[in-house]
Length: 397
Image 1: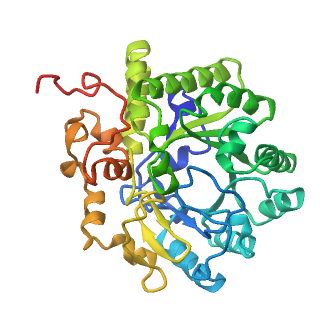
Image 2: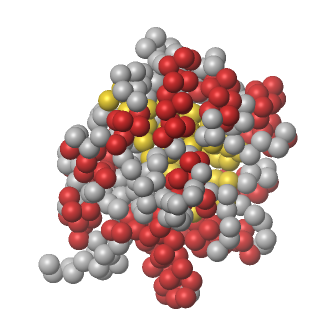
Protein backbone atom coordinates (compact mmCIF):
# COMPACT_ATOMS: atom_id res chain seq x y z
CA UNK A 1 0.00 0.00 0.00
CA UNK A 2 1.59 3.28 -1.16
CA UNK A 3 0.31 6.38 0.61
CA UNK A 4 0.46 8.76 -2.35
CA UNK A 5 -0.89 11.76 -0.42
CA UNK A 6 1.58 11.21 2.40
CA UNK A 7 4.62 10.64 0.21
CA UNK A 8 3.90 13.12 -2.55
CA UNK A 9 2.50 15.97 -0.48
CA UNK A 10 4.09 15.44 2.93
CA UNK A 11 0.77 15.45 4.76
CA UNK A 12 -0.23 13.46 7.84
CA UNK A 13 -2.76 10.73 7.02
CA UNK A 14 -4.76 8.31 9.20
CA UNK A 15 -2.82 5.29 7.92
CA UNK A 16 0.60 6.60 8.99
CA UNK A 17 0.47 4.69 12.26
CA UNK A 18 0.21 1.40 10.39
CA UNK A 19 2.62 2.12 7.55
CA UNK A 20 5.66 3.81 9.05
CA UNK A 21 7.91 3.50 12.09
CA UNK A 22 9.72 0.62 13.73
CA UNK A 23 9.93 1.17 17.51
CA UNK A 24 8.89 -1.80 19.61
CA UNK A 25 9.59 -1.04 23.33
CA UNK A 26 6.56 0.01 25.31
CA UNK A 27 4.11 -0.19 22.41
CA UNK A 28 0.55 -1.28 23.07
CA UNK A 29 -0.36 -4.38 21.08
CA UNK A 30 -2.67 -2.53 18.68
CA UNK A 31 0.31 -0.50 17.41
CA UNK A 32 2.74 -3.37 16.94
CA UNK A 33 2.47 -3.02 13.15
CA UNK A 34 5.20 -0.39 13.70
CA UNK A 35 7.73 -2.74 15.13
CA UNK A 36 10.64 -4.75 13.80
CA UNK A 37 8.79 -7.89 14.90
CA UNK A 38 5.54 -6.48 13.58
CA UNK A 39 2.32 -8.44 13.78
CA UNK A 40 0.21 -8.85 10.66
CA UNK A 41 -2.90 -7.06 9.57
CA UNK A 42 -5.33 -9.96 9.06
CA UNK A 43 -7.84 -10.13 6.23
CA UNK A 44 -10.67 -12.46 7.12
CA UNK A 45 -12.69 -13.53 4.11
CA UNK A 46 -15.56 -14.28 6.41
CA UNK A 47 -17.93 -15.70 3.81
CA UNK A 48 -17.96 -16.75 0.18
CA UNK A 49 -21.57 -15.66 -0.19
CA UNK A 50 -22.12 -12.54 -2.29
CA UNK A 51 -25.02 -10.73 -3.92
CA UNK A 52 -22.90 -9.72 -6.94
CA UNK A 53 -20.73 -11.59 -9.45
CA UNK A 54 -17.63 -9.46 -10.10
CA UNK A 55 -15.53 -10.48 -13.10
CA UNK A 56 -12.25 -9.88 -11.24
CA UNK A 57 -13.18 -11.38 -7.85
CA UNK A 58 -10.04 -12.95 -6.38
CA UNK A 59 -12.19 -14.99 -3.99
CA UNK A 60 -14.54 -16.39 -6.66
CA UNK A 61 -17.54 -15.53 -4.47
CA UNK A 62 -20.89 -17.10 -5.23
CA UNK A 63 -24.60 -16.56 -4.57
CA UNK A 64 -24.96 -19.40 -2.08
CA UNK A 65 -23.53 -19.86 1.42
CA UNK A 66 -20.83 -22.38 2.24
CA UNK A 67 -21.86 -24.60 5.17
CA UNK A 68 -18.19 -24.97 6.15
CA UNK A 69 -17.58 -21.33 7.12
CA UNK A 70 -16.44 -20.53 10.65
CA UNK A 71 -19.23 -20.32 13.21
CA UNK A 72 -19.68 -17.35 15.53
CA UNK A 73 -18.05 -19.26 18.38
CA UNK A 74 -15.09 -20.30 16.22
CA UNK A 75 -14.70 -16.75 14.92
CA UNK A 76 -14.61 -15.36 18.46
CA UNK A 77 -11.92 -17.86 19.41
CA UNK A 78 -9.94 -16.72 16.38
CA UNK A 79 -10.36 -13.08 17.43
CA UNK A 80 -9.25 -13.88 20.99
CA UNK A 81 -6.01 -15.31 19.60
CA UNK A 82 -5.46 -12.38 17.20
CA UNK A 83 -5.88 -9.94 20.08
CA UNK A 84 -3.42 -11.83 22.30
CA UNK A 85 -0.99 -12.07 19.36
CA UNK A 86 -1.09 -8.30 18.78
CA UNK A 87 -2.68 -8.18 15.33
CA UNK A 88 -3.47 -4.46 14.90
CA UNK A 89 -6.27 -4.74 12.33
CA UNK A 90 -8.92 -7.30 11.35
CA UNK A 91 -10.41 -6.60 7.95
CA UNK A 92 -13.82 -8.24 7.46
CA UNK A 93 -14.06 -9.16 3.80
CA UNK A 94 -15.82 -11.74 1.67
CA UNK A 95 -17.72 -12.44 -0.53
CA UNK A 96 -19.98 -9.83 0.94
CA UNK A 97 -19.42 -9.77 4.71
CA UNK A 98 -22.67 -7.88 5.40
CA UNK A 99 -24.46 -11.11 4.45
CA UNK A 100 -23.06 -12.77 7.59
CA UNK A 101 -25.76 -12.55 10.26
CA UNK A 102 -23.13 -12.16 12.99
CA UNK A 103 -20.95 -9.53 11.28
CA UNK A 104 -21.77 -6.69 13.66
CA UNK A 105 -21.55 -8.92 16.72
CA UNK A 106 -18.07 -10.07 15.66
CA UNK A 107 -16.90 -6.57 14.70
CA UNK A 108 -18.01 -5.28 18.10
CA UNK A 109 -16.25 -8.20 19.78
CA UNK A 110 -12.98 -7.48 17.93
CA UNK A 111 -13.17 -3.75 18.73
CA UNK A 112 -13.66 -4.42 22.42
CA UNK A 113 -10.61 -6.71 22.32
CA UNK A 114 -8.50 -3.78 21.11
CA UNK A 115 -8.30 -4.77 17.44
CA UNK A 116 -9.18 -2.13 14.85
CA UNK A 117 -12.05 -3.67 12.89
CA UNK A 118 -12.58 -2.50 9.30
CA UNK A 119 -14.93 -3.57 6.54
CA UNK A 120 -14.46 -4.31 2.84
CA UNK A 121 -17.80 -4.37 1.02
CA UNK A 122 -19.47 -3.80 -2.33
CA UNK A 123 -21.61 -1.21 -0.56
CA UNK A 124 -24.88 -2.13 -2.24
CA UNK A 125 -26.45 -3.38 1.00
CA UNK A 126 -25.57 -0.36 3.17
CA UNK A 127 -28.97 1.11 3.91
CA UNK A 128 -29.27 3.87 6.52
CA UNK A 129 -30.03 1.25 9.16
CA UNK A 130 -27.02 -0.87 8.15
CA UNK A 131 -24.80 2.24 8.23
CA UNK A 132 -25.92 2.89 11.80
CA UNK A 133 -25.17 -0.73 12.74
CA UNK A 134 -21.70 -0.42 11.19
CA UNK A 135 -20.93 2.61 13.30
CA UNK A 136 -22.41 1.12 16.46
CA UNK A 137 -20.29 -2.03 16.02
CA UNK A 138 -17.14 0.08 16.12
CA UNK A 139 -15.97 -0.55 12.55
CA UNK A 140 -13.33 2.12 12.10
CA UNK A 141 -13.42 2.25 8.32
CA UNK A 142 -15.57 1.02 5.44
CA UNK A 143 -13.99 0.46 2.02
CA UNK A 144 -16.58 0.35 -0.76
CA UNK A 145 -15.60 -1.17 -4.11
CA UNK A 146 -16.41 0.89 -7.20
CA UNK A 147 -14.78 -0.15 -10.46
CA UNK A 148 -15.87 2.66 -12.71
CA UNK A 149 -18.71 5.10 -13.23
CA UNK A 150 -22.25 3.93 -13.90
CA UNK A 151 -22.52 1.14 -16.44
CA UNK A 152 -18.77 0.44 -16.35
CA UNK A 153 -19.02 -0.47 -12.67
CA UNK A 154 -22.20 -2.46 -13.24
CA UNK A 155 -20.49 -4.54 -15.95
CA UNK A 156 -17.65 -5.35 -13.56
CA UNK A 157 -20.08 -6.16 -10.78
CA UNK A 158 -22.45 -8.26 -12.87
CA UNK A 159 -25.55 -6.35 -11.81
CA UNK A 160 -27.38 -3.38 -13.27
CA UNK A 161 -27.82 -0.61 -10.71
CA UNK A 162 -24.85 -1.72 -8.58
CA UNK A 163 -23.14 1.67 -9.02
CA UNK A 164 -26.10 3.67 -7.73
CA UNK A 165 -26.67 1.25 -4.85
CA UNK A 166 -23.01 1.45 -3.80
CA UNK A 167 -23.06 5.24 -4.05
CA UNK A 168 -26.13 5.32 -1.80
CA UNK A 169 -24.23 3.14 0.65
CA UNK A 170 -21.32 5.59 0.69
CA UNK A 171 -23.70 8.51 1.20
CA UNK A 172 -25.46 6.71 4.06
CA UNK A 173 -22.11 6.26 5.81
CA UNK A 174 -21.06 9.88 5.28
CA UNK A 175 -24.43 11.12 6.55
CA UNK A 176 -23.88 9.60 10.01
CA UNK A 177 -20.16 10.36 10.23
CA UNK A 178 -18.93 6.84 9.50
CA UNK A 179 -15.47 6.94 7.89
CA UNK A 180 -15.74 5.54 4.37
CA UNK A 181 -13.68 5.38 1.20
CA UNK A 182 -13.78 3.78 -2.21
CA UNK A 183 -11.64 1.08 -3.82
CA UNK A 184 -11.07 0.59 -7.54
CA UNK A 185 -9.19 -2.20 -9.31
CA UNK A 186 -7.51 -0.76 -12.41
CA UNK A 187 -7.83 -2.54 -15.75
CA UNK A 188 -7.78 -1.36 -19.33
CA UNK A 189 -11.58 -1.42 -19.26
CA UNK A 190 -11.97 1.21 -16.54
CA UNK A 191 -8.71 3.21 -16.45
CA UNK A 192 -10.44 5.89 -18.51
CA UNK A 193 -12.92 6.43 -15.66
CA UNK A 194 -10.24 7.45 -13.15
CA UNK A 195 -10.58 11.22 -13.81
CA UNK A 196 -14.32 10.89 -13.17
CA UNK A 197 -13.61 8.89 -10.02
CA UNK A 198 -11.51 11.80 -8.72
CA UNK A 199 -14.38 14.16 -9.56
CA UNK A 200 -16.73 11.85 -7.65
CA UNK A 201 -14.41 11.82 -4.62
CA UNK A 202 -14.59 15.60 -4.49
CA UNK A 203 -18.29 15.95 -5.22
CA UNK A 204 -19.41 13.29 -2.75
CA UNK A 205 -17.00 14.34 0.04
CA UNK A 206 -15.30 10.92 0.07
CA UNK A 207 -12.14 11.22 2.18
CA UNK A 208 -10.17 8.22 0.96
CA UNK A 209 -9.60 6.26 -2.25
CA UNK A 210 -7.45 3.20 -2.95
CA UNK A 211 -6.48 2.36 -6.53
CA UNK A 212 -5.61 -1.35 -6.78
CA UNK A 213 -3.42 -2.92 -9.43
CA UNK A 214 -4.84 -6.16 -10.79
CA UNK A 215 -3.62 -9.36 -9.12
CA UNK A 216 -3.97 -12.54 -11.18
CA UNK A 217 -5.96 -14.58 -8.68
CA UNK A 218 -9.39 -16.21 -8.67
CA UNK A 219 -11.52 -14.76 -11.46
CA UNK A 220 -8.85 -12.07 -11.77
CA UNK A 221 -6.56 -14.69 -13.33
CA UNK A 222 -9.12 -15.19 -16.08
CA UNK A 223 -8.95 -11.52 -17.13
CA UNK A 224 -5.16 -11.24 -16.96
CA UNK A 225 -5.18 -9.86 -20.49
CA UNK A 226 -7.20 -6.90 -19.19
CA UNK A 227 -4.25 -5.67 -17.15
CA UNK A 228 -2.66 -2.45 -18.36
CA UNK A 229 0.52 -2.46 -20.41
CA UNK A 230 3.59 -1.13 -18.62
CA UNK A 231 3.32 2.16 -20.53
CA UNK A 232 -0.36 2.57 -19.70
CA UNK A 233 0.28 1.66 -16.06
CA UNK A 234 2.88 4.41 -15.87
CA UNK A 235 0.50 6.91 -17.46
CA UNK A 236 -2.29 5.92 -15.07
CA UNK A 237 -0.04 6.24 -12.02
CA UNK A 238 1.07 9.65 -13.31
CA UNK A 239 -2.58 10.68 -13.50
CA UNK A 240 -3.21 9.54 -9.93
CA UNK A 241 -0.17 11.52 -8.76
CA UNK A 242 -1.29 14.63 -10.67
CA UNK A 243 -4.84 14.56 -9.32
CA UNK A 244 -3.56 13.97 -5.78
CA UNK A 245 -1.31 17.03 -6.08
CA UNK A 246 -4.25 19.01 -7.42
CA UNK A 247 -6.27 18.20 -4.29
CA UNK A 248 -3.34 19.26 -2.13
CA UNK A 249 -2.80 22.56 -3.96
CA UNK A 250 -6.48 23.41 -3.52
CA UNK A 251 -6.36 22.47 0.20
CA UNK A 252 -8.79 19.60 -0.31
CA UNK A 253 -7.92 16.92 2.25
CA UNK A 254 -8.06 13.47 0.71
CA UNK A 255 -6.08 10.30 1.40
CA UNK A 256 -5.14 8.72 -1.95
CA UNK A 257 -3.33 5.39 -2.09
CA UNK A 258 -2.22 2.84 -4.66
CA UNK A 259 -2.24 -0.82 -3.70
CA UNK A 260 -0.68 -4.12 -4.83
CA UNK A 261 2.25 -2.76 -6.83
CA UNK A 262 5.19 -1.46 -4.83
CA UNK A 263 6.86 -0.27 -8.02
CA UNK A 264 4.64 2.77 -7.48
CA UNK A 265 6.70 3.72 -4.43
CA UNK A 266 9.97 3.46 -6.36
CA UNK A 267 8.48 5.42 -9.26
CA UNK A 268 7.27 8.18 -6.93
CA UNK A 269 10.71 8.39 -5.30
CA UNK A 270 12.48 8.60 -8.68
CA UNK A 271 10.21 11.45 -9.79
CA UNK A 272 10.82 13.36 -6.57
CA UNK A 273 14.58 12.79 -6.86
CA UNK A 274 14.51 14.82 -10.05
CA UNK A 275 12.07 17.49 -8.90
CA UNK A 276 12.60 17.78 -5.10
CA UNK A 277 15.87 16.04 -4.08
CA UNK A 278 15.60 16.94 -0.38
CA UNK A 279 12.02 15.73 -0.15
CA UNK A 280 13.02 12.57 -2.03
CA UNK A 281 15.37 11.53 0.77
CA UNK A 282 12.56 11.79 3.32
CA UNK A 283 10.32 9.69 1.07
CA UNK A 284 13.05 7.08 0.61
CA UNK A 285 13.28 6.65 4.38
CA UNK A 286 9.50 6.29 4.69
CA UNK A 287 9.46 3.68 1.93
CA UNK A 288 12.21 1.75 3.70
CA UNK A 289 10.19 1.82 6.90
CA UNK A 290 7.17 0.66 4.93
CA UNK A 291 9.23 -2.30 3.75
CA UNK A 292 7.39 -3.05 0.51
CA UNK A 293 5.26 -6.12 -0.04
CA UNK A 294 4.61 -7.89 3.28
CA UNK A 295 2.71 -11.03 2.32
CA UNK A 296 3.46 -13.63 5.00
CA UNK A 297 4.91 -10.96 7.30
CA UNK A 298 2.82 -7.81 7.77
CA UNK A 299 -0.37 -9.08 6.19
CA UNK A 300 -2.07 -12.46 6.23
CA UNK A 301 -5.41 -14.00 5.36
CA UNK A 302 -7.83 -16.43 6.95
CA UNK A 303 -10.48 -17.82 4.64
CA UNK A 304 -14.11 -18.53 5.48
CA UNK A 305 -13.30 -22.13 6.47
CA UNK A 306 -10.36 -21.17 8.69
CA UNK A 307 -7.37 -21.85 6.44
CA UNK A 308 -4.45 -19.42 6.73
CA UNK A 309 -2.80 -17.98 3.60
CA UNK A 310 0.07 -15.51 3.02
CA UNK A 311 -2.36 -12.88 1.71
CA UNK A 312 -5.89 -12.73 0.36
CA UNK A 313 -4.78 -13.32 -3.25
CA UNK A 314 -2.34 -16.19 -2.80
CA UNK A 315 -4.73 -18.86 -1.60
CA UNK A 316 -3.10 -21.88 -3.24
CA UNK A 317 -0.59 -21.87 -0.37
CA UNK A 318 -2.06 -22.91 2.98
CA UNK A 319 -0.16 -23.00 6.27
CA UNK A 320 -2.79 -24.49 8.57
CA UNK A 321 -6.31 -24.06 9.89
CA UNK A 322 -7.39 -22.01 12.92
CA UNK A 323 -9.81 -24.78 13.84
CA UNK A 324 -6.80 -27.00 14.53
CA UNK A 325 -4.06 -24.56 15.59
CA UNK A 326 -4.06 -20.95 16.71
CA UNK A 327 -3.30 -18.39 14.01
CA UNK A 328 -0.42 -17.08 16.13
CA UNK A 329 1.24 -20.52 16.09
CA UNK A 330 0.65 -21.02 12.37
CA UNK A 331 2.03 -17.58 11.52
CA UNK A 332 5.28 -18.02 13.42
CA UNK A 333 5.92 -21.58 12.20
CA UNK A 334 8.54 -21.46 9.45
CA UNK A 335 8.65 -25.20 8.78
CA UNK A 336 6.70 -24.49 5.58
CA UNK A 337 9.25 -23.45 2.96
CA UNK A 338 6.99 -20.79 1.42
CA UNK A 339 6.32 -19.17 4.79
CA UNK A 340 10.03 -19.30 5.62
CA UNK A 341 10.86 -17.82 2.23
CA UNK A 342 8.41 -14.95 2.56
CA UNK A 343 9.87 -13.97 5.91
CA UNK A 344 13.35 -13.74 4.39
CA UNK A 345 12.79 -13.53 0.66
CA UNK A 346 15.39 -11.17 -0.75
CA UNK A 347 18.02 -13.85 -1.45
CA UNK A 348 15.39 -16.02 -3.18
CA UNK A 349 14.20 -13.42 -5.69
CA UNK A 350 15.07 -14.05 -9.32
CA UNK A 351 15.19 -12.08 -12.55
CA UNK A 352 14.80 -8.33 -12.39
CA UNK A 353 13.50 -8.48 -8.81
CA UNK A 354 16.65 -10.27 -7.69
CA UNK A 355 18.89 -7.59 -9.22
CA UNK A 356 16.79 -4.51 -8.43
CA UNK A 357 18.51 -1.64 -6.65
CA UNK A 358 15.31 -0.91 -4.72
CA UNK A 359 14.48 -4.34 -3.35
CA UNK A 360 14.64 -2.87 0.19
CA UNK A 361 11.61 -0.67 -0.52
CA UNK A 362 9.70 -3.04 -2.80
CA UNK A 363 10.60 -6.45 -1.32
CA UNK A 364 10.04 -8.24 -4.59
CA UNK A 365 6.51 -6.92 -5.13
CA UNK A 366 3.69 -9.48 -5.56
CA UNK A 367 4.71 -13.14 -5.43
CA UNK A 368 1.18 -14.22 -6.41
CA UNK A 369 1.57 -12.49 -9.79
CA UNK A 370 5.01 -13.98 -10.34
CA UNK A 371 3.74 -17.49 -9.68
CA UNK A 372 0.62 -16.96 -11.82
CA UNK A 373 2.70 -15.98 -14.86
CA UNK A 374 5.93 -17.96 -14.46
CA UNK A 375 4.94 -20.83 -12.17
CA UNK A 376 7.69 -19.77 -9.77
CA UNK A 377 6.97 -18.01 -6.48
CA UNK A 378 10.36 -16.26 -6.57
CA UNK A 379 10.38 -15.11 -10.19
CA UNK A 380 10.18 -11.42 -11.08
CA UNK A 381 6.85 -9.66 -10.81
CA UNK A 382 5.60 -9.17 -14.40
CA UNK A 383 3.66 -6.05 -13.38
CA UNK A 384 6.78 -4.00 -12.59
CA UNK A 385 6.69 -1.21 -15.17
CA UNK A 386 10.05 0.36 -14.27
CA UNK A 387 12.89 0.16 -16.80
CA UNK A 388 16.15 -1.67 -16.21
CA UNK A 389 17.92 1.69 -16.05
CA UNK A 390 15.51 2.99 -13.42
CA UNK A 391 16.05 0.04 -11.12
CA UNK A 392 19.83 0.01 -11.56
CA UNK A 393 20.24 -3.05 -13.79
CA UNK A 394 22.89 -2.76 -16.49
CA UNK A 395 21.22 -3.38 -19.83
CA UNK A 396 24.12 -5.43 -21.24
CA UNK A 397 24.48 -7.75 -18.24
